[in-house]
Amino acid sequence: MLEIKKLTKKYSSNTIFKALDLTVRDGEVLSIVGPSGIGKTTLIKILAGLETADSGEVILNDEQLPVNGTRSDAKVGLIFQDFNLFPNYTVLDNITLAPISVNKIDKITAQKQARNILETLGMADKADLYPFQLSGGQKQRAAIARALAMNPQILAYDEPTSGLDEASTNQVAEVVKALKAQGVTQMIITHDHPFAELVSDRVFDFATEVSR
Amino acid sequence: MNYFLEIAPNLLAGLKMTLGVFFLTIIGSVPLGIIVSLGMKSEYFTVRWLINGYIWIMRGTPLLLQLIFVYYGLGMMGITFPRFEAAVIAFIINYAAYLAEIFRGGLQSVPRGQYDAARVLGFTRTQTFFKIVLPQVIKIVVPSFGNEVINLVKDTSLVYVIGLGDILRAGNIAASRDVTLVPYLLVGLIYLLMTAIVTVLLRRSEKRLNIWR
Image 1 (tube, rainbow over the protein chains, first blue to last red):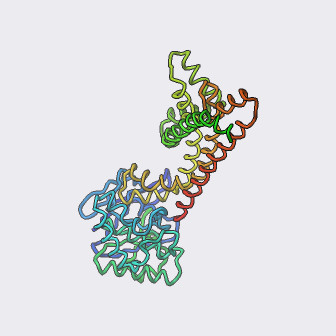
Image 2 (spheres, rainbow over the protein chains, first blue to last red):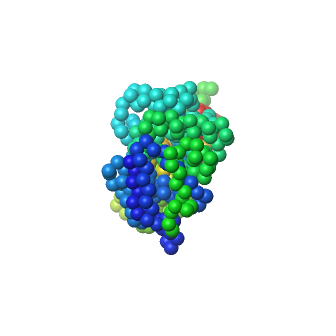
Image 3 (cartoon, chains in turn brown, yellow):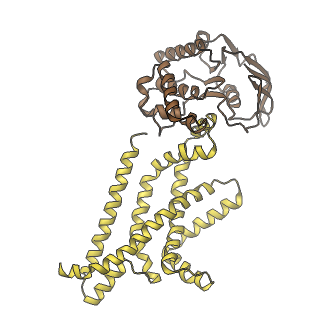
């Protein structure tokens, strides 16, 4: 379970959000909607440890995560809007690099696990391709696989459907549902209301439900 | 042909010197260049200031002058190196400055998102640099790096100024002794051969790096 308590983020005098309270229950899919430039991505970056917050708490499965920018771990799996796959590695190596070098898992086990993940995402035949050889939707699933390989306690997506056509968007929806069925807790930042309604248990409106 | 065989041992001895300076410079200046380029992004003003001063001096004065300074100048100040070591040191610190500028450009072209992605996967800064950033920098800098390597092949001829016998000096001696231009022609051909080898090797590595984009 992810609990956000009284989280506040300011840029000098500009308050992005104030005393934000939000809870994502285990296995739940929560979408955060709202127009661009409203601070949704900032929130997700704070959760992933890429941004600092001014005050407040982030508690993930009863563990308090620092929000002062000192974190560098994979407890929150982040799927970037532009994927940020490593161009110099194949899909398989993109997925296994962190388990091998961060978690010190042996290569054989890591590859086996990665192939299993790719299988569930319908990407088994793409393991040996480089990112530039993939379509947008495939890159996204590779990015999801890379995050999943680190067994994150929650998976957070930043605008997962931006730049994707309808077919790819539907595939993302299928992936979210399939992961939900496996019990993965997911948080989706999007401005795509229909998509949010389709895949989530709950939709949080960042424009109206947040004080500034 | 007979004449060629006659002067070949001298030319080969000179070639050995040339290649020695060449390879030691590559081995020394690449890592030093990487370290300097990282230092240029240091959060400490003094470090950036010192590095910029160093690069300014290295790029702003002739390599010939730097060679003279390292051997004779430092020698007068009591820091003496043997000729060969002095030449290698001068070449390494000179080429490291140029390479550092090239690596800096390469580092800047790696998108911020790559660092972010590495961080949320839990990589340390060292792992991020060696496994994710450096391979991308290498791919970007290979063409400009190749340019410097080819320059280096020819720049090694400057070592004559501190009395080292490289291939050009060997040719020079033979030419003035026998009053003929043939040794110069041979020396020119050997330089062409060396740059051809370097060119082929660089093309090959560019091709290998092109399996990803």
